[in-house]
Length: 404
Ligand code: CTP
Image (cartoon, rainbow, N blue to C red):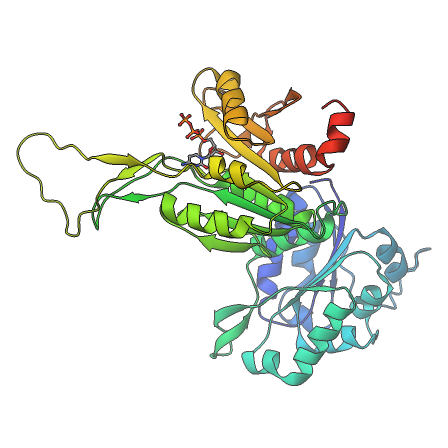
């Protein structure tokens, strides 16, 4: 992600301790981070903490007495690329929804015109109070993103909705606000990711090394580009990207059913999942006990989902498959492109350093029916953005004319 100027507003709430991690991670990612605090927020975390983490002066007072030629709340508002308020108290939300500007934070918030993200954190009853709900609805209507609160144990002793999401989730949601290039607005993109598990008996299964990282990065990138992103995911330790609808599947048969159903009204389908090609003919009802000698497991073919999607492809749909190979990368990828009626195949070789299972980077070649483009090693997030831009930004006709 490009380096941006991000304002982090902090209001009074115990969750302010999590904002320290948020500021630290945004700063580590190279952004210029400016923290604004309400007066009561300073009772929870000292401005010095945020000052040290952000390496910028923390602004708390609208009428700072030390002379400066800039009007702080206006100059900051001008240069901000995004404004996140976390935690956002009921009081702040009420003020922001009604245009009240009575301290440095609310004044700058009102003066800013960059994308804004509000992260409520409060007691369940305060959050669910019709007044707060009305104010949240007003913020959304004004084009401000409001993050859903997590549920769980709250510091006040209650259990319920109102917990502030973790810093990494807020940073993830901020990615959506920071991306101005919404070239997939109004499009539905279905992405499959991760491995499948084929049960042998109630205890054992056949699977592969796929971590899901490439597919999850694609879902995040599609969401950032404004798409209605649906992620069909096999078992993975990864967290679902914020704002992406996730369908959890286990077996190749589950995946086929969900992807084929979701693809009905999709504009693009990306098959990044490592789908098992074979599954046990029978799944034993009870755990298989060991006996002397070797054991064979009879397997049958699973449905080839990409092939089926290719057969059902509608005129406006774009179909993207992956080819992960250990040898003859491009020849095998070309065979998949033609054999499965895909529009693009993203080929990568696990023999390449930094590409393949579990790592955060990838080295891809995109094949289409009119040519191919190879890319240098890059992060999976950058690879995901590249794939979407190359394959989905323009329709097929424009691409053919450009001689892709
Ligand atoms: N794929 C699929 N359904 C399957 C197997 C694979 O939709 N049952 C998809 C994958 O998600 C990927 C593409 O097909 O987008 C290529 O998968 P890959 O396993 O590399 O190739 P196969 O077609 O299975 O061929 P082979 O195993 O012979 O390489």
